[in-house]
Length: 298
Image (cartoon, rainbow, N blue to C red):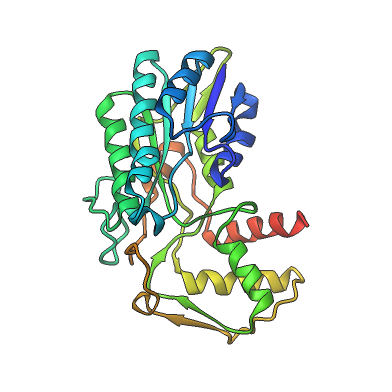
């Protein structure tokens, strides 16, 4: 069976390739092999390869740039999911889609539930929500995993940026009033694979289709995340210029960006835990693993 992974070179897509390789033939075309912005090319690829499962990890994730490029964001975050859902309906297969905490309004302090009201603050969040709703409305067999603060041992992400800056600078100002759970791409892929029962001819989800929050247990802010990155890096023997007192917390208001960020990105994960019979690990334990994988790669 062919397993089609969009965004295969991205952080989540790369990890999905590793987790789903034993289940079938993984197809994860690079951009020069398939332009996901080209709807006709996507249709032709689907017809040619006839995937039996689609994992849609592609997205327009440049949150600030999306404010000035709404059409590009809409194509990848909304129109592509619509296209993939239509194919999934026609073929009777499952579509797994990865969404974001940015679909929620970002207010308050209570963790969002899967059925909490949505009200995105940005073009990125709005287009991600449009993709979610289109998949649901299509009637296809689907799993939508909403996650937050994605990072990995590879690619461009907050953890790697902090390590670079921590080696270069003695002090940093980091936002401390946005709350969420840093989620490694590896964990996203591992949990995705747990949702499926493989057999000789196809992959079948053994959990009810719908939306699930996929993030580690616990919460922090960006300042707390950075501080723990530096702490664990020092424990691993890394030499840093940044001092323990050198990370200062600042409010979001002091770090303006084109796109408004949610202050509350907390997401309840009990629905996913109950469905799979698992307990999600803490964000701290996942950071240790991801940081070690990154440092060991040098």
